Image (cartoon, rainbow over all chains, first blue to last red; front, side, top):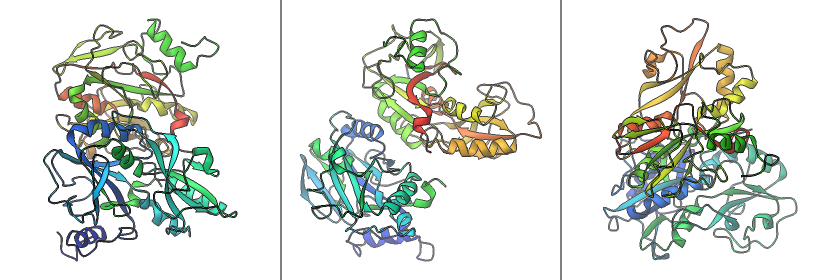
Length: 260
Length: 260
């Protein structure tokens, strides 16, 4: 761990999380740094899961895959430990979430592999810069009717992030997010939720939606939760993920992974 | 196979290749369609190779991975057969190229997996539209000193495509290729070849280069041949690739995989 003079906001955030001083959501923490979804599975399933991410790259942009048995990142964060550096985890057994611990030191095994997948939180700062609201009253995660490309036992429908925006903001947000091709990129749909079968009545995150305000337009982005849902549906005997909005903060800067 | 009224230029090209009527390079064939490098290896090595491509995405943009044992594409070309639809193959045994057949019908096995990787040929049409010369007197493939990220037994140095361009064309080509983030994207270097250790004295393709004309500037792009070289260096007991410039023509259009 570098001294505080040298430490970046991302390193400081991970350090606070590791020591248990920050156990809340990572939303808004270390702004400007790329945040990741985490999926940990057994090596025996890793090829199919890697292929699922390749086949559904828009939803599942892979930023790093650890070596089998290693909980340490090498490429996107120096000296990070995935057993301790996220504030909250979900532990699934046979597809059921059975535990929500703050670290997984006692759960790590030599046959596990960790996948870090880009999160839409990453471009929120770029959106706020142009005045687009990003708080939870304007942002939902929900299922759609769109099928993903299957790989082995991993399959399921596309999950999207939906934001309600003014027409002007919808246009700006489309341009801004298109600059992040390796982090979900441009929207996959705009307007009528029924066209993609977006289930706004039962969002995975965010309050139930009764009707869309007439002056706003819903805009939909492919969401990294798609990978987690596919792994959950595969009913693996063991899967560990980040808890929603409790992501991994990498050393990558959002500005460094976007196009000019 | 659709009738000729329905067939696209890509389908016609693959049909001519399959029937043995076209056995030459695919450069210039079906312009506007995405061309791919091919790497076929045994399933036992597929996870490491898939991970190598993920870790070196700039050089190795994966467009499709077939199911184990299937030589048929599903996502990027309808009804294509990778045993017959490329005009020439290279067959490596223990890292040595031992045969250069026009089809591999007799070599296909149930434990093989095919990887299709974006080729820089894909954006050549976009370059010619603005008057940038793309013929072989202006285009080389060569090794560099830059290391790739290793995955299992796959490792090696980055291989690049180099084009000699006028300063004006160098700027235009940078802008145009940046629009293809999933197909090598913008240049990785411009100017002095020594900075990246580009071995212009022994190019893999193109004539030996003695000196760079003073009015031209060398521009370097990450090249899909990187994946082939890594697989070659791994000295697998069996690997089959496309012969250089004898690529696979997909149904994807270059204009559909580029940003606006």
